[in-house]
Image (cartoon, rainbow, N blue to C red; front, top):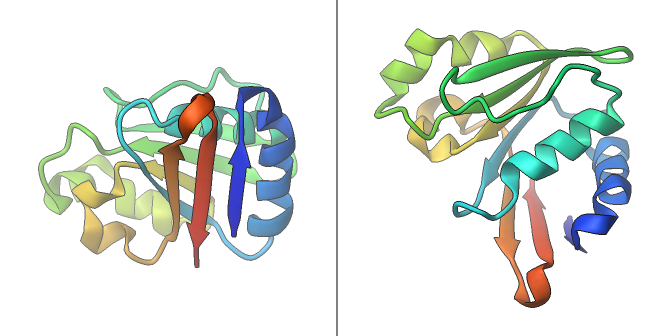
Length: 137
């Protein structure tokens, strides 16, 4: 699956992502350079999931937990500061992934042994400040 969009199209793209991906999958690994829009995309998906909590980057907390009325727990993880899979295990990343909850993981390459089974989502910046999201099952 491949989606090309700009910021104003995020609500529509988030709805498409939920419709096409959430029914069959629960764990999503987001790849992309700094500034590609990983957190912004996840925030938009959380809004579309009707999460009422403030969705922010969990860079310092590693894991933020939210609640979506129709789906239950939603975990947003940012592994950027981690140095190994062992640190990810200590932070509870594996527990969140194994919980059956929806999980969005930024910087999954920091703990590849733990995140390898996730749906791989690649964000890249295109000319004109649009984005391309490529999803590999």
